[in-house]
View (cartoon, rainbow, N blue to C red):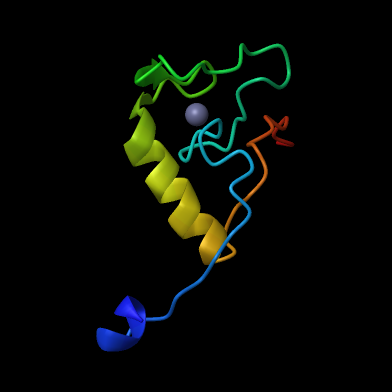
Length: 82
Ligand SMILES: [Zn+2]
């Protein structure tokens, strides 16, 4: 009823990986040998792109992106063909 009150759209998402995913590069912690984040990890640095994250802020961005359907797979380094 709150979203209706403010003329907004209410969307639910599957929360899977919203905490563990780096919103910058798509790396998911707990995968590919990266240690899974614990609840006590309030801030962390992505081992792939070195982005510093505040846990809840990163998760919030992931939730928005998931709702918008713009999650992309982790960036895989490809060899450039000259
Ligand atoms: Zn990253």
